Length: 317
Image (cartoon, rainbow, N blue to C red; front, side, top):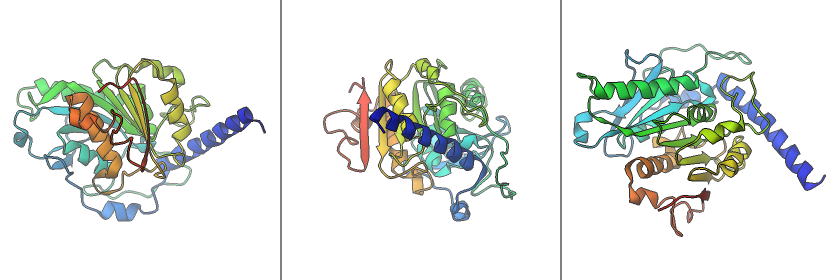
């Protein structure tokens, strides 16, 4: 088999696995889900201990935020609209990761409701092969709409506390495709795309949320990072292909070697991938030069860390 045919075969095989893997993630819980659900929420490692809640004024979303907004003083909140793995309606499915982001002064809004972990109602076990309700890319847009409206609404706890220039879209797996789906929104200042990538073999209409084509990449107008799990990540081939194709904006890709598709979402405070996401947000949204050292410079943090394989294009210190 020649090299070109080998690559085509590998791409087709991994894409088939990606269809199956994302579909499985959407309908089945991980085998250790009971143990994960029993854990308390983290408050994050940032300066502002975080909490999660639902708000009746924002239907079908979960809010992760600093618990004491007054303690932030003059520090403005950034906004992160988040799409869940599997395009799931469980807005708490990546709670450790999202609470970590929130503890660094971000208002993180995930699509869905609290369906796992503390505060979740009893839930029927999923039926194998049956897909339940799904979130959509429009839910990320709704999250941004709500946050910016709350910033100007007298009486809102967020009144005057949000910086409209600090808006990001992010997501895991199918939720990362949702973030890509709203990439053209002019209010978005950066993208953090995790364990995801537009399918190389074209859209799969049978799996909700996976209907993007590579032309969508041309709509990206902001600095962007892909955080992947190395070659064992079923999104690896597609995410790396996205990285190679994107030529109009500064872009980076960080692969946590051996992490696979599940990344570090279930680890305390979201694990090392959450730290990379926080540093990227702080650098891109707050011009934090210290955070930027993780990504630029001959001895950048990710460049010199053996746990990561890192590449970038057009990033400036």
